[in-house]
Image (cartoon, rainbow over all chains, first blue to last red; front, side, top):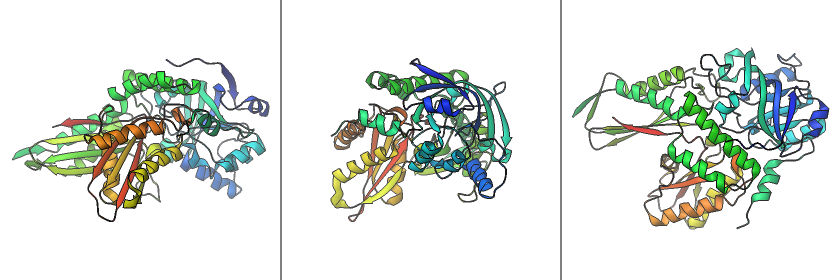
Length: 189
Length: 280
């Protein structure tokens, strides 16, 4: 059922060169290692940064997936795992980008402050399909909790992914699909 | 008078918690498939394809459609000739949630306190909306509600002078400002009238309608169609990435209101529109 358009295959963690090739609207398949974090984990990470303390995960070149998965069924590496809404990470994302974070995966538009940090430091924001949690889980081959186990679904997980389907939603040049795509299909009334 | 053991409530809530989260309603599946032909954006088509494929996987493997398995909203219409036995009704509902979310591999998404934010660990408590109605039956609906679309919902107290135009503008603007955040294609529940809290509650009840059903009042049925057309001209499209298919339905519910007031509520529902009812 999924349309197979031209897709770029990339490896995570990301290099600056890869980030620079990604433009708004590109269909991308991500393979490699990524980390999960959402609201509560972001708060802890940024609190650590502000206190000048070490983080429990590396950030340089990394991709963070905004997700809180459902529990895994027996024999599966992870439960349904679709993206959560990204704007809630607006207050935190620029701090992580400043520390070398190269990519975020979520859904919905990220704020101007994040877009500025992405331009300044070279980072990219990918949109995954919200609600496509069972489908996305199939591209996650391995998952382990690496920090904040007490947060349950919100714990930080290290994921091994294969051909995780995303779209470049906001790129390192300031391109923004939420503005450009909507303008293209808007019908004035 | 009919004696009724609340264990039946626990069993129904448990079963429906799982079924709603695994099986998307036929009306939604049909509408999503039909929307593929309406969508002009290639990215939009691809997203719709993923959404359709996803619900098929969830159905086949009996796993959650969306990892956000929601706040468990439970609507109970309790016949006044029913005598509940065997325990506390609220606790019976919560026990159903507890069992359903544990055994069904559903995510526990509820924190005990909005500011201290420690997870309750079992997705309880449910949000329960109880009505006492004539008869000796119990009508129960489970409608898990995800946070992403709930966060894009809003109540506003308009002035009576704002009239139908004010109402329509508020609905369209609320959807426009939501963009891709609530996981379009969405269903839009609109509550007009009542008091502040009634508007929100009837907007949520509106979401329990099946796609293709319209408000029985032709005036509001026409407004539903007009709003749907206007929303689909916004260009938001699937997941907000641009496109023609932003909403699959608009459901309006109304209630009498005060001479000074025109309350309006918009409760936005993502494409994982989950609800199922039983009569016990």
